[in-house]
Image 1 (cartoon, helix red, strand yellow):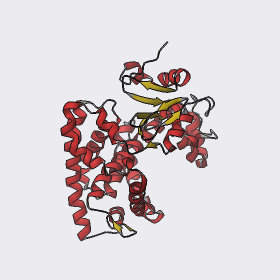
Image 2 (cartoon, helix red, strand yellow):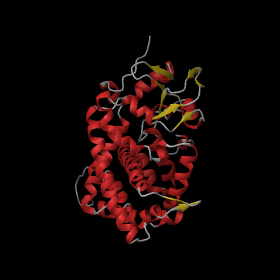
Image 3 (cartoon, helix red, strand yellow):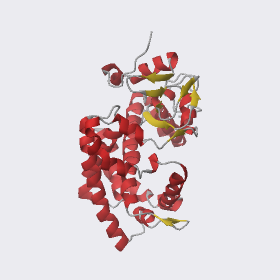
Image 4 (cartoon, helix red, strand yellow):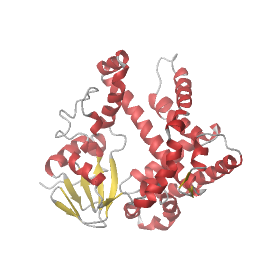
Amino acid sequence: MTLELDLNAPEFHANPFETYRRFREADPVHWSERYHSWFLFRHDEVNSALRHPAISEKRLETFRRLTPPDRAAAVAPAFATLERWILFQSGPEHRQRRQLFGHGFTESAIGKLTPVLEKVASELLGNLRTRASFDAASEFAIPFPVTVIGDMFGVLPEDRLRVEHWSDDIAYFLTSIPIPADACDRIGPTLADLNSTMEKVVAARRASPRGEFLDELIHAEENGQVLETADPFANFSLLLLAGNETTRNLIGNGIHLLLKHPESLNALRQDSSLWENAVDEILRYRSPIQIISRLVVEEVNLGGKTQRPGQQLFCVLGAANHDPEVFPDPEEFDIRRSNAGDH
């Protein structure tokens, strides 16, 4: 029986893990005619693909191919912004940007954020303590990263709702296979609005720095290279997605799993040293990002099949993290799992 992958099928959205299991067992390195792409379902091949020099992170061509032809011109300006994301760069260009942005993520710079994290969490939870019930997603998991990231980048409190909308539009565009027409229509205005807002913020900070996270990025210098004004705009949108979308998914998934497994929640209350491994197990059991893309740049062989230059490749993290060859009893949520960090 030939398996056909349909990422938009109702049964896939209801329970993707059953689809993952079937492909992992029967066709773990799957060529999809529907998507004209490779899909990897086993931990071994996914792990290899994410590290193989013949498979590149510079994969915007993947998203261009997923764009409806009648929207290609409309999204061209958006791709110009996305091309400056560290996420879509490789080689010397990636290393240079990473070194520069590393100034904003030093131990000292991150340490300055601790009071902000504690203050935001305390304020959000303080408003909920006296309530009989509340929506953990909309009232904590979503506003927490939005507020923190907005503060990191100097976005005014009255503009924080726009941060959430920006993040939603960016995630919708980059996580849909294929990309819907309405996602294409929204991404251009979203990035333009984001860049316009950040241009004003950066100009104000250049004139009057405060010694905060954004100032570290703006004034970063490495080997004579200084961040261009455009870079904070482009990579703010990246941090919005990477920091906001993944964090709120992690928090939401974590709350859901711990409420479903009260014995794990009680264990964490009694022994806080279990938290680090518990977070890894949450990331493994319900990966915040289920699928990520790559581009084959040189011929390579994964799973006994040949992938050729120019072909798209999708690493199915959600399937790899439930591979029984790596994680015994993968459907069991176990905060003491010895190799949870191998997600």
